[in-house]
Length: 415
Ligand SMILES: Cc1ncc(COP(=O)(O)O)c(C=O)c1O
Image (cartoon, rainbow, N blue to C red; front, side, top):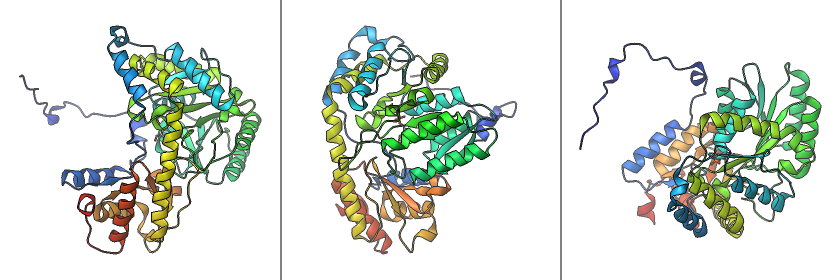
């Protein structure tokens, strides 16, 4: 076997200068924790990883079987189309109609994305430019800020944990900022704070959008992970929503297909066209077997979405019960796959990054520090309920031991 020639790094004849848009990106605050997590794993520690909303459950077997069948068909190995095959877009329209009573034209009101994160980022590139301002919800899911920054836009972040106040602040910003914000990003059920809204929130948002002439992007990633009978409303169900904005949905969470990278953008035809145009230049669409399996998922596996949400609810209760038992103040979320927990005294002064490092280093439990979601997230931790109930209970025991100064144990040793 021929080995790759080594490329000496120091031989570059000129200094590499990356674009300003890369330099403008804020520092990645999860880096330190990810490095320690990696080191722990290399050292053989069985880290209980509640850091990322990365589902560990397998998709419905019907989905993987269809994927395998489609792989065997040689016609499915060519380039696909960047906006997604027609039958997939039709299936998205059918699901929107079934779930939310929203009628969408699959030809010009829906585009398939390589995960909703890709679609969201390119939508920001399609809409924003130098001098444009976007309002983003705070604490923020990082890409909501980074995508606007990469598009050379300015960001104003507004606390979204009290939705009515958020709308008042949007109106206030529109009244006082010149030029007015061009785009308002919303994300309910919200990552990381788990805040939810009812339909009237979107009714009011659409009215504001028309009044102040801003566009709306609704990131609806947690549409289906709802608890205790709560049903998250779709932005597109509000009258006139499609005239001012779009909504992103994803199969990552609802169908446990995060690695498959299947997301959708639906709503305003001009915004959808702008995204499709950019994507037409950048990509050739999703691997076709993935798209075919996604059709089967939406057509035949709706029951598994409900089962999955019920499982997340059981995990939510296991984690919240455990944390309350050790004296933490936690609000039981109505949706998402996270618990947003206030750092208890006397640890709050430590700051969420150092506290998370302590939990990982001494307790073997990885969580996301609130500060990783901007200044408004400080004082909190985000714990993803992606591990099973036994592991979540074990995580609470390890956190308790670590904070009460009992010598740290690895999960495997404690099990
Ligand atoms: C709020 C939010 N939007 C978007 C995404 C990305 O989803 P996708 O896997 O479809 O890119 C996530 C993933 O964690 C998320 O939490």
